[in-house]
Length: 564
Image 1 (cartoon, rainbow, N blue to C red):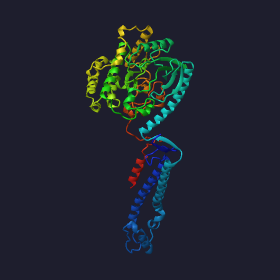
Image 2 (tube, rainbow, N blue to C red):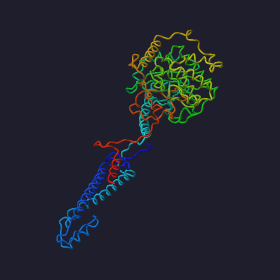
Image 3 (cartoon, rainbow, N blue to C red):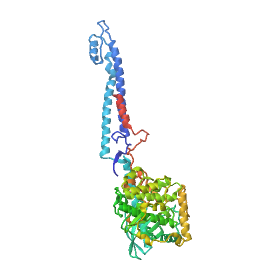
Image 4 (cartoon, rainbow, N blue to C red):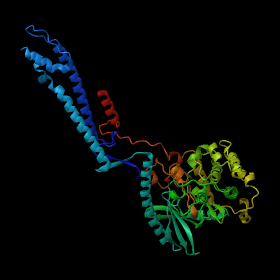
């Protein structure tokens, strides 16, 4: 679990040696107070005795006998006895004030025992005993959160594996080959490699819980309409969705999607030089370098063509464009994750840019494209809605890209459309061979069925309500999947082609700001936002059962200084 501090279970942690219990501190403080009281009393009695001894005189007129200091008390007493005189204050001094001498001695002994007890407790706290654990820093809290995530993830994986086997038993066309690792950041989404017996090839199947806030209802008619819609979205720069289904398994409802299996990875894998099958936590750890400007130009143009095609087909603003949702197939960029828009899910970037969008919700794809363009050049992802001067300085070797980003983000909250970005000189004069067989414009296509039009209308209404901060939509109770928070984002699906919203763990993972309940929500994201990943470390604060302050070490030092 990382750096931890051990505490004795019989008392809270203190600032003295980190392991001193309340009884030991009380004993120590009592000894100091007793020592202080004894010394004070002794000083007062000393002055009183000195004054009386100075006033002693001989009863027989043999002269006055004076003692000039307390250290000569014994000599004075001997002289008084020698002359035969006696004085009650002189002869009974030890009987009257012996406790003033013994008190400090007892206090010193008690202080020594208290210090020894404290040292023993500290040694036990370091080397053995019954312990409870608390984090020293926010890093440790993040590690504890990661442990909770792994436990929750293990439970989710086991449940999803059983659900996948149960689903495939009822569909003889598919057979399960492999349950992939956590190639995406969404804790409740699982990826499986299956075999399609009808075409004898491998497919990628994803399984995730159905969210009650999904804007579309879970019916057989909805499934047929979605399949028809995905077939109508055939385009060389759109990654196809082959099948979608709703499955009721063990009182749980799942959304099943099947897409082609691609082992080349996504644009994010290309940027970070990672393998798509690696765990999401591992494959985006290191900041990378940018891509060649020619490759940035061509891939950017292909993504713009895909977004423009979706607009021409009347598809709602996607909002799920990022490098993990751009599949690379034979060097061609193909946009994936379009089904997330219909399911009411939000991307990871949405909470960052939603205030900038305001009433210009349709500009979300332009903003997302600007982020992807920056990541291709900088080798890391933006953590703010707009790039700063420092960000642009990092890509100063791409002057044409800097001009494009200034065009996108340079007018405040007024963003250009996808078509306007596509008309920039940087993306023009490119020979796109794949577009030679592209579909005709939408006005020449067959109209959507009423069911498809109703689905698209419901999704748009859902997005509008979400923009206003409301939850509602469709025949199902509306609201975004998981809420307008970073926890509703999705992860990169790597080379599988089902890319989901992701951020390298080096900039966004590790959040000490979520709970196990939040991690377990159907649309939660295990990665806190980049701003909260690293915070200044702070020591854990403990309060005693009696309400005492945790800074007992300070009180100890103050008391000792007061006595000295």
